[in-house]
Length: 367
Image (tube, rainbow, N blue to C red; front, side, top):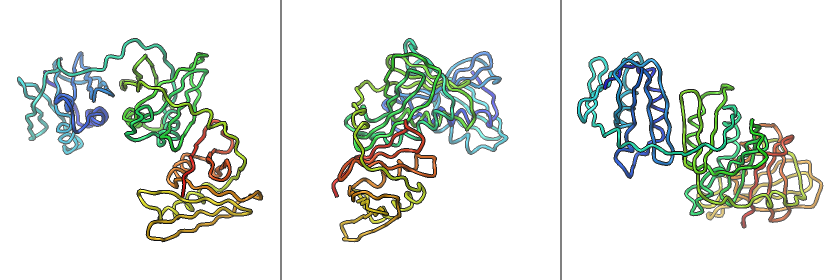
């Protein structure tokens, strides 16, 4: 087979589908992209067996066929070609010959029939959501996912689907983030699925630009698929039970203050300078008219920051991971941030004024 296509047309698709390909693979063919040309429609596929991304390009010249070729090499070569370059790809036995102007590259191929595709089964549920809504939902929650936790069900985001909403929840056991968006799904039964960390990262790349176009999301027993125009992302779901979290969100909180979001972030960031990579704890002390933030490190250095607050109650003192507090505040879009404290050595819940759904919870730590 052979393909003739402009670099400007190929490169965005090449970049998108290549993003899912890992640098180290268990199978050599997973380092390759799958190319399929039929009736002037070119489809590119990349996968790591957990997540698969495919995108089609219409109006491509060439003869029909399939082949696979190195994702990294093809992408690197294409990036370095001139913007106005035209690319030709032709298979010759077990090789693919790529030419553009006076440049010529011979690349190794692997049999297209051996390329693994994710078999998803029947899609049992589907709904649409605006790109911007899904992008915002993940921005508010995904940072709280665990990283390579032995409790594998924490290494992802829980989607609760039903009753006209998509709710996203993420936790690493020390903090929790929750938010939701309206969707066109009126099913009274709420379905829970856990989308793995790798897929959440790829979905962030998949969401293209800031337009108001809609994404179609479909769910089967073990998979989730997102579709936008000629682009599709399929991911396996995590087979596990997400921890029960609703009880901790219903904890009685006795102390509430509202503070300027930017000032709080700046205060916490300055105090964090004297924390260490291994220990990010700071002590928050709330008393009449002010809140103080204290940080110490093994070199016996100390940071003390104070900010004025509208508070008249009894003094409250608790230690928290400063990074978790900053992340929660950055997820908020309003000028003010509401801080709810359980009391001495209790949890802190961060909320956005006027938003009763979105919640960021930070567990206390000993300092």
